[in-house]
Length: 374
Image 1 (cartoon, rainbow, N blue to C red):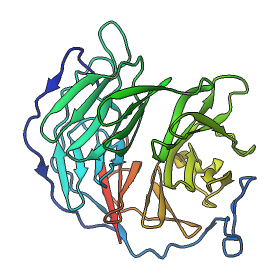
Image 2 (image 1 turned 45 degrees about the vertical axis):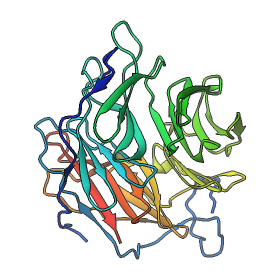
Image 3 (image 1 turned 120 degrees about the horizontal axis):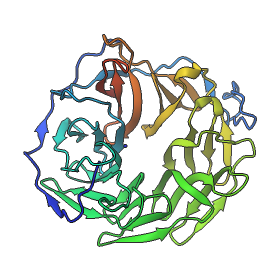
Image 4 (image 1 turned 180 degrees about the horizontal axis):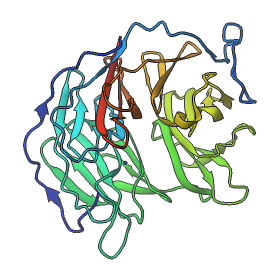
């Protein structure tokens, strides 16, 4: 995003964490309520514009070590509370950036029964303290599972829900959340407690925020006219927020990033539909102003580090600096097809941005991790 085995309480880890090699050389070093790109950033502090990036950093491909014959792509790249970054490819062990280098965490023994070996969500505190969720749904022989890595072994418990938890947010060791279709589960440091979601939301598309008392849930209405909805959790209750009338979100929200309680970005499935920005009071619809080919214009992740908002869009990564969106060139590869970015995250301690995906296309795919530092 795997498979739970009912009654299996613990899975021993096979081996210790293994250090990975460093980096491979790089091949290349206004608010717009109508959805139109803005070019007035110099005069309108709320506007966005585009220009050539003056950033001094570059993307480099990470040596992920030996990869198995069965390869997919790094679909999930997620920041943890400590700043460590987790990356998962269904075909191999988990990679984790610890601030200075890469570690390998053995996959848990999730039986592959119905949903291949994909995971639903991942997140946590650090490389030695995190959770993954399998994609099981409640049936005669399966149930949704939660798997916790403590640095040595995997512990497995059932979530108690009917559907898998497709969204996970960790804010502290005593403030972690997972979200399924109709319920959220909050970990207070001791136990997981169920929190009902708003009745009008069919399922949560995006969850983002600063803490368990400042949490945004974006989804679609389950009643006519079936439009996009935004709810804010203040620690006690869900409060619906008004979205711009021009925000249609035809394909549902795909990714989001929270800079602060007064700066949140939510991105639609394509950049052509624009994006939402929260200023602490109101949601605004804006546009990157960058035109991308329709065949490759699908967003896959967002991150923030060192004053820059990052957005992964298929074969492209966009960045927002001081109100200006630019493209951040990716390394060239020798594969038949270019890099396809599926997820992005950041380590704020070192201003390191990590993107995951694949190269080689459908005929000869291989998982790829990229790392950006100034």
